[in-house]
Image 1 (spheres, rainbow, N blue to C red):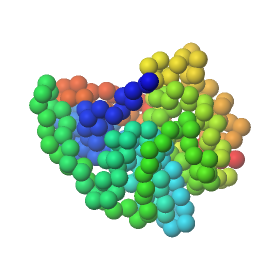
Image 2: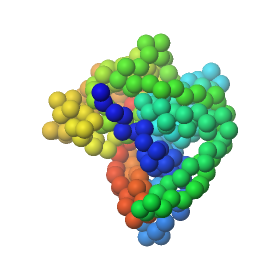
Image 3: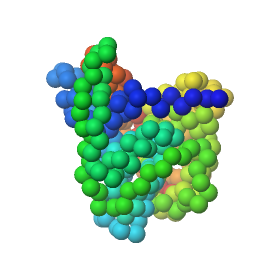
Length: 245
């Protein structure tokens, strides 16, 4: 039986910090890569074609983790559903949606931790969260005005199963927001299921999406995940906006 690596308390703290941490908590070094901060907001507001708020519109955030991008989407859409495979991540997101704050700890070094609070402002739209598998989403999910999936496809065992579902998830004329660093690792995705990896992943992704979607916009989006105060993961996602044909 496979163990979900995203259920550990250590990773929960890392992701709460990644999504909600203050800049100086995430990166306590003034000469660090500050352009990589605020990723969970930038994947929405740098990539989407912004529209006036519409109470009847709906968005889906797949692989939402602890929910920061879902709350950003709530500024633009009447209903937002965030889905993630990790129950601990979804429990945290639900608590934030209920009370707008959540106390948590993040690693300083060794066995030293700092205590802080994740906070979010109340969105205009209605936000909900549920545990789910991006490769086996409920059939009743369909016709969203926007689907957002950040740093997801290279963490799925069968990314093509998620991609095959996208044409029914996004309504005609709707937006698909994808961001991925193409970090193909066999511990998450068997090599036979990589989209690219042994060839140009960007071109391969365009090929598999092009029957249903038109690439409208692309931008390289750096991001920073802190492990402790002296160790960080710096990566660059390929951020894209696609229009459903």
